[in-house]
Image (cartoon, rainbow, N blue to C red; front, side, top):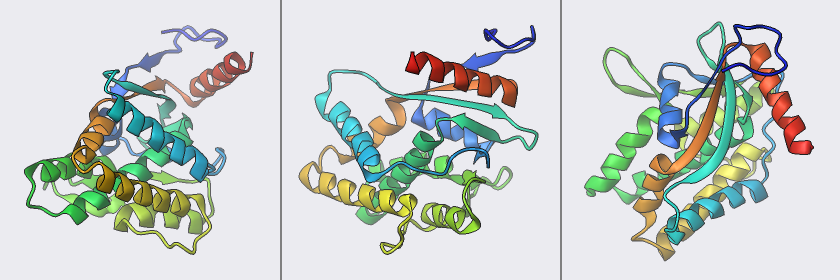
Length: 232
């Protein structure tokens, strides 16, 4: 597909609608990276909470087959990583939410085949899989950011590795992760029969539109064009 405004006939993009599970599973071969020229993670509890409410409404409503979360614009950089140009707030929050759900599934225990299956589905979406031994390494996550200072990146990585956040931390990673834990606990108590359905729906029925550009310049053109369209 050619992009208007880019002065090269070879410019191409790939657009392929994917479920959250399909999107994040690509991190197995191409890790996600938030480049240093992007703004820091800034989603507040209001935005994270709205994402949760939208997913809950989708699951409880049962009227639509899928829920569209939005688009992700990226390109594969020289290190073989998916460098996120647009959608970094959304994808970062998705990682926090899915990690919180996995933590809850661990708390439920392993005497439930459906819970075990959901955990197996989530494992390769957050952590690296050894390509030869096919073993998950929870010390190596599939997303990292070059935006923040070293401490901020460490906090995000630690949450994904351990499933824990320091409640006295003031960063948005910790705040949103703690919020998700609270909302998940409340939902699992008030809707115990639907909790597993919610996890499955998030993985399989929440849809993202990844837009892969062939270069950084093309990705930035797509991003800037979409901003102009949105503002016009």
